[in-house]
Image 1 (tube, rainbow, N blue to C red):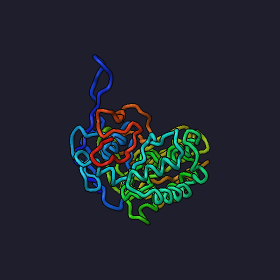
Image 2 (image 1 turned 90 degrees about the vertical axis):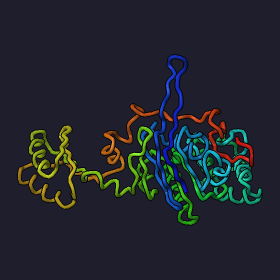
Image 3 (image 1 turned 180 degrees about the vertical axis):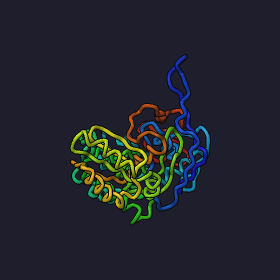
Length: 350
């Protein structure tokens, strides 16, 4: 469904003597099969959105090739856009139109009959908790409501391939859980393929069949969540001792079953293989040594731990040492000022 080889995107920042070339995406290879839900993860500026914009024809690759839904993203961009749904990070609704009219017009651009677009739109409004807002303008909606309207726009034509760029940003927990169910339903009921970028690691964990991690414009891992976590050396055991004078003893006892020990105040931490099997023995040893615990926590590896193992940095790190995302620019056709991948009519790029 998605096949890319050697995707590269460079852009320029600054002017005059301050002008410099930035490599936002550097040789990305991707394969996404029909019916997969893929989570695309990386810190801010890693190249996620830039890659997504190339795959959805909003940015022409500087180098490399990609086919989406069987069509080349450069030479067959119109066919690509007719075959996909896209929910951009920045949104694509026009604030001065009624929400329902905007959705229906969007559906008709995809070739839907008006009556079918109205029926489908009202169904999505109900499913995404937008009932009663058909005749309201986006400018008078809350941020969460506008985000859900963006999602309706991307799903109106029942696409079999959906690109979702940070779809749950700004949603409250209830709306976020509702969208998770809807995304899962796209695959289970309709067999759709979903390509999802997100900063919420639990979201990727729950929804994605496979996780692809990008860092500094390059793919650093691609596997199931469980397999990626298995690369992290053990569960994290966190001991909080009752007094400072017990820290050294706790460190020695935990160090007997863990190679790397970290001490922070009265907390002694280390990664332990098969912690569930060895922690009972550790507790007996601590008790015999007179060490009292205020708490003990055993945590399974997370996707953030995977990224930390692979790169030495956290997925939750701020923008430091990252590459800024390339914006959609008029010089990179096809271009839509809203950032939307609205399909163009035959022979007319937007």
